[in-house]
Structure formats: structure tokens, C-alpha cells
Image 1 (cartoon, one colour):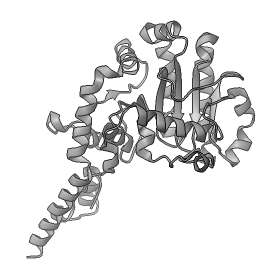
Image 2 (tube, one colour; image 1 turned 90 degrees about the horizontal axis):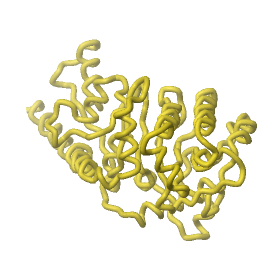
Image 3 (tube, rainbow, N blue to C red; image 1 turned 90 degrees about the vertical axis):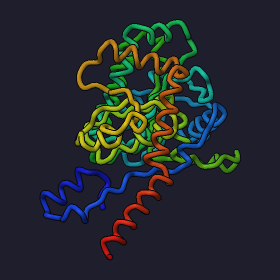
Length: 326
């Protein structure tokens, strides 16, 4: 029993397993991902995450990137949540409606290519509607939040991400750079302050709800859960066509009828085209225009990746095995 057709083909072609003895069992996500939620739930999740990121405070006070770089070797031995900014004295209100929240729900390793997230933000702020909005709305802020830790052997990969952040804030005027932040929660979903304030621990589906969009420019993936989880949460996904392509194709539903295909924005290889940047800017600045796409994706997840869908697949397999047994 495998999670995709590529694994099944390997067992059949390379190891000689009989075709009628090899099955696929699709990925499944918790039905909690698909539950309806509103702005109050988004604010609640962002507020609790802010307490995690800021040592128990409601307002985030970022650490200057230069300080973090200087302390990096020490931080790597005891990774604690942090938000980075361009200079001292900045702050982020997690409940602000003028906060664009970009989520990279993975750990930091080279194949995740997180520096591409920051290159995308830099390109968006070069010119066009996104730059204009940041110039006109002086309360608008942006956070790129990376949820996972950095394995010690991947410190160089983290350094590459930090350098990309430095390049980003150097590429724009200080008036904009002061509103761009990089957050690391290193896998934390609660903080000691939660008990005093009566907060519940965050769960994975609530972390997705914080996001304006999920970024997923991976080069290689074994499955690609963030595509399914963001779709279930009704959050836009901007993802690469990672390798193996057969796995990506199965996740998004290529070859299935349109009603069963996940709609996504393709994170391109190489340079960002103008049309891509226009689409992403519109998605981030006017998410209400994409309601139909997001509702479509939630329906797809219900049909293909819900607990009900998994149960039906198990029933089909059991019926087949029963027939084989006579």
C-alpha cells in the first residue's frame, strides 16, 4: 500500500510485485481544516502566535536582523521564536487588518528554497500595484512566517534566507523596509503566557488560518501536504511544480475532472514574469476576489482528502481484498 502511483510503479516495475497486490491510499487531512471560520478566528490565531513570537507580549517587537546574524551560532543551539526587522524600535500588531501574512509552513532546508519567497516580495515591491499600495498606505505591513526549525546541518540554508531578507530591505526605501518582517516560530504552538491569559494551544489548521497566502516554492517533495492543507483552509497557495512531477500532478489532480482539481498559482522557476507579479499582487491586496477559487478548493479537499474520502477508500480496498480471498 503506497501514497502515490510513483511508489506503486516502482514496486511493480523494479521489484516485481503483482499489479493486483499493489494499492494507493490517498493522503488525508483532519476535517478541522475544512471547518468554516471568520476574521475573529484569524485574529485569535494571529494573537496567540504573536505571544509565541514575542515572548508572551501581545505586540511583536522585532529583533534587528544584524543582531540575529551576529548571534546566529548561539541561536542555532537553542532555537527560540523570533521576528526580525530591519532596525530597532519597530513593532507589529498581529490583529491589524493592514497586515499581509505570508506563511511558509515547513522547516528550513535547501530544497524548500525559501529565499525565493523573499525574492518574490522584492519583485512585488519593485514597482506596480503592490509597491503603490505600500507607498500610499503607510500602515500596511508584511510578515513572512517560516514555521519549522532549522536542522543544525542546514545552518547555511538559513543564512541564505537571512541574506535574502537583507537584500529585500536594502532594495526598498526605509519607509517600506520598516514594514517588512521575517518570523520564525521553530515549531512552537504554545507559550507559558497562554495559561495566564486563558489561551488554548494553536493547532496546525489555525496556523494556516493566519495566512493571507501560503508560499511553497519547493524543488523536491515526497507528497506536498501544504497544497492540500492550505486548500482545505481556504487559503491561496502559490507553489512550484516540484519533483517528482508525478507526485505534484496527483496532489493537484491533473487528469481528473475540473471539479476535482486544486486551483493554485504557479511559483515560476527563474525570473518572475509581469503577469505573475500582477496576479500575486492582486491576490494579496484583494483576496475577496478569489473567494470562488478558495471555496472550490475546499470542496475538492472534501471530495478527495477528507476523513470521509479516506474511509471510502479503505472500504473499497477491504471489499477488493475480500474478493481476492474468495
